[in-house]
Amino acid sequence: MPRFFYSHTNFQHYKPKENLWRRWLKYRERKKMFKRQGIKWKNSRHPYKTEVASIRKIITTIVLTALFIGWIILILFLPYFRIQKINYDGLKIIKQAELDIWFNDKLFSGKIIPWNNYFLVSTNNLTNKAISHFGLEAIEIRKIFPHELKIVIKEKISSVIYDNGQNYYLLDNNGYSIKYLGVVGDDEFKTIPINTTTVSSTTKTKNVVSSTFSNTTTTEKIHLPNFSRLVKDFGDFPIIFDKRKINISENILVIEPEIIQTALDWQRETEKQGIGRVKYFVLDNPAAGLTVYTYKPWVVYINIYKPVNGQIDNLKLITITNQPKEYIDVRYGERVYWK
Image (cartoon, rainbow, N blue to C red; front, side):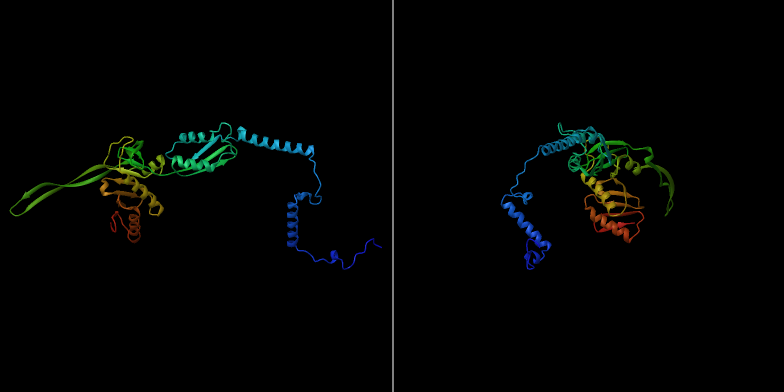
C-alpha cells in the first residue's frame, strides 16, 4: 500500500495543460520577480547559495585573455600583413609617382599604430580623401590578401588636347595651357589637289568680247589630327584643332573657357545619346562656332554660345528624318540646314 494516498480529483493530476505562450509568460514573470529581489537568475534553484571563484577559473580567464591580446598584437605588427604593393589602373593624366607619394603618406603616417596593416586599412576613408584631393570622377580601392592594394581610377575629363597645327598641348577647363604633349607628325598632313580657273586672254570684236580660260592644278597640304594615336598616347580627351595657328607656351590663356566646355559637353552627350563618337573639333573663327568631325560622312556646325542639348536634339531629329551627305548646321536655333 502506498505511503500517501492521491485522490483522483487531485489538481496535479487533472490540471489543464498549458500552451507554450503561457509557459513563456510564467517564465518571464518569474525572472522579473527574482530581479526585483536581487537574486541572480542562475541561482534561482538555490537563491541563497554563495559562489567562491576558484583559482583555476581566474588563471584560465587571464591566460585566455592574454593569448587573445597577443594574437591581435601579432597580426597588427607582423610585417607580413603590411601593405607592400599598390597596383593602379586607369591613369591618364595623374602620374603614378604622385599617387605613390600621397598613398604612402596616408598609409605610413602612424608612428605607433601601423595604419598600413591589411586589417586596419579603411578603403572607404581612402576613397573619399582621394576623390577630394585629386578631383576624380570615381575610384575603387580593393584589398588583396595579405599585403596588396588594387586601385582603379576614373579621372574626370575636364581638359582638352589643343592642336595648333604644329604642336599638341593639354589645356585645362579655363583654356590655359598646362602641359606640352608633343609635336605634330608628318603623317598627319594630307596633300590635296586644288583646281583653279584663270582668264588667259581676251579678244574684242565689234560687239563681242571673248575670253580664253585656262585651268591649273595646284596642291595644298592640310592637317588632319591623328585621332587614334592621340587617344592611345594621351587618353580620351576632346581634340580641338585651331586653324589660327597660335604660338603658345605653358600657363597662358589660349582659347575661351566656353569653347572648352562646349567641346567637353558635345563629346560626352553625343556618346551618351548614341549619335556617334566625336573624332575632333575644328576652330577657325570663334564667332562662327566649331566644326565637329565624327565617323559619319557628314560634319556638324555648332554654336559655342548656345545650349548644347537643344542643338543635339535638332541633330538627332535631322539624322532620323533625313540622310545628309555633307553637313548639318545647328547653329541657328530652330532653323537647321543640311545637305
